[in-house]
Image (tube, rainbow, N blue to C red):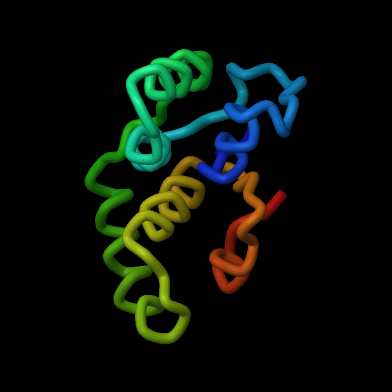
Length: 116
């Protein structure tokens, strides 16, 4: 079981990465979904994005995740330039106890989460 960062899914959608694992064990949340949608170039691209990510289970972003993301932002936004999106992604991994599959390890290396 892993949480997928948007950078992994961008390569998957663009055919640069093959995901051979059981997709029911690879999770995303609405933040990742929204990051991908906002990157669509046109309606055809948007349809491709939505089709490709539909096989990944979507984790709820509840108040516990938002509270933890606020704590992370208070602690790391100034010192490590943490973004709102990364804080919510990291909080999701922490609350659900999932490793994060990302290429952007520098954005998360200072946190207590497993990076793959």
